[in-house]
Image (cartoon, rainbow, N blue to C red; front, side, top):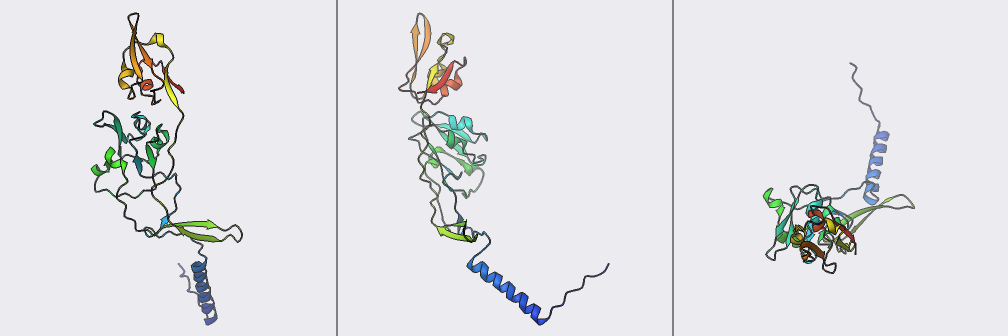
Length: 242
C-alpha cells in the first residue's frame, strides 16, 4: 500500500490560504451564512400556533368530555370537581402534543402556549391535575429574546434579527359552530334516561306521555357537547346546527 505524500506549500501559497480563511471568518461575522441559535441564551422564534404546554380555563369548559374522547394517546382523564362538573387532567408522560384537544374543544377552554421545555422530577409529577393546568408552570427564562433568520430577496443574503417573544400566546379561543342535540327517531326511544343523566346543562328531561317515557331536549339550554349523542344506546340522537 502506497502512502499518500503530504503536499508541500511555499510561503506564497501558505499566505494565500491563511488570508482566504481569515476573510471567510470576517464575512461570517458581518454576514453569517449559517443558521445558529445559541440556546438557552436565545430562542428560535415560534409561531403563535406552536403546540406546547396546554393551559385550561374552567370558566369556558362545558364538561363535554370531547378532549378526553379525541385524545389518541389516552393522556386526558376527566376529574370530578366539588361542583359536580368534570374537568380534564393531563398526563404529559403520554401526551404527544398533537393538540387535537385544543382544536376540538367547543368552548375554547384549552389553550396552546409556546412553553416546551418543562422539567419534571419523575414520571408521577408529569400527571398534571386540573388545578395545575389553570396557571402556567414556573418559568425561569435564561434567554434574552428570540432569533429569526430571513433571506433578503435583493442580494440573497441571510439576515439575523432579534426580538422579544411571549411564551403565553394571546389567541382568541375558537368559537366553534353552535350545535344542539336532536332526537331524529323519537318513536324508537326506550326511555332509559341515560341521556338525561349524562347532560351537564340540564337540557334533557323525561316526560311521560300515554304511559310511555319520552325525552325532551331544551335547545336553549343545550350546549352541543354531544355527550347524550355518544351515550344513546339506540343511536337516535344527532348534533345539528343551531
